[in-house]
Length: 455
Image (cartoon, rainbow, N blue to C red; front, side):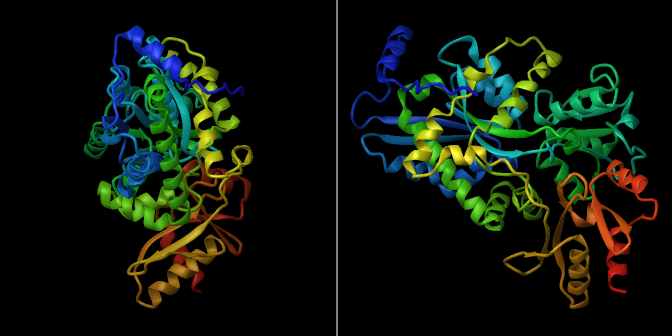
């Protein structure tokens, strides 16, 4: 990937402003510089540039240290990335965060003029295999594979990461995304209600909606995005015009994002509780995604992510008439490299680290401030059994899918008993693949598995 030299040149900014007839909004000492940040509070993969960042006040703290001007941050919360892009096109949002497919649309839609043009400046979080974007069905649905959805209605937010995952998955399954199913363009909460009422056969969405519905026993996981084995990510875009006039604000934002990332990776459970308080999402659901083995919260624009991003471009053509744009020109890590350097951090070393998250098994007991990590899924079952025997309530238990590596709720996983081992899987398809390759294994329920390990 080719990175370009910094574009933030004061002279160029003055020329652009003069040509557009706009005045420098912070020309005089003491003027208030306003920055509008668009975010999605319930999209856990963006919390280091949104919910957690706002709750901890990291951006305001960074801006207050600058001096020279007063800085005012306006936070605008949305359900999906589409309205953030619309506001950036209208030059009403300066910095925004969203998933990879919405970022494609953002890059295409905002290129029409220089004042709205955006650039991808950082990543908030990624999943090397594309897990956590998922398709869920009603608990009593007869569907066991994507093929069972053929000819039926599926809810998705068109242009979202959930929609992109659905279209790729259907194509791989041999189903035309346009004619094989009827995709209803619905906001996540509307689609959730539609699934619950039986108006749609399935819901394809991004975090945290699949996990939330399954946690609430309102849905069952049908398809795990990790089946695609394609990296997915969420990232931050900034309007170039704004960044050229206020490079100090973009720098403060990226430094604050790094602050939030360090906080989350160092204290993931505390971060989950903060996000839960701010969004009314269950902390158990938030921690599913930001706990060990979930989303990898890391800011660098890594080549693997950019390459996967380029491969997603055909998606634009599949959903509408979008202008072509040069992703290499859209992706710019100049400001992020500076932020790393100012902290004494090695950006290139961070870029080279793209290892998948290790498998985890973790127990969270009610009334305890921390969680307990155990050796493997079988040890987790024993820990659950021991806790129950001691009269302790299990608040949540997490395991990693034995094939795909996806972090999931232990009591919602499909369990297979094979010799001395108990193996969890996220989907019926994953469990069936293992059973087909291991004739001596058998599928059992979570409760059966907990009961058996005690014998």
